[in-house]
Length: 223
Image (cartoon, rainbow, N blue to C red; front, side, top):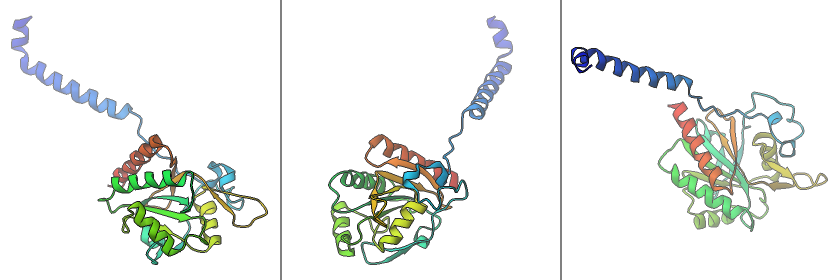
């Protein structure tokens, strides 16, 4: 046996290398490739979606928008063009889930602070209270990086429509009150083509880790 190995060691070595390469290649083909869904209104809980778009089953994208951020600057879709971003809805005086959500958003900000292709966008659902000055104070308290994360306010009607027609993530408080919003714990992941690619519980650390993983997945697809 030893004599056989000595005589054929080159052949055996080549065979072993070939076998390793073949098995590695086969595993990569058989391993399921991660694929994030592309969400449309018909795929989401109707409570979160405006009735006028609930029937849409594909080709859904975030509508054009224009709001004012914590520095009094107009922020529009152009500022997020070609970027991956995470959106959410909050208000500065919220005593329950908002502090946890914003702390987790800070974690996402810090994780991608050196990557200009990842941005954040937080919309207040109480624009009558959350003025530019209030948002600026809140941003300073949270350590918001202005070039990375916009806290925006604007017309309540516009915020309501983008929340329920574009991001598919906000409930109405009462049917009788027009534009009355109850924000949820949802973080919404948007890709470079303005498509919704995921919803995450912004109060849950495991969900935040999943969100970071999914952002990295989208980044890898873009490169």
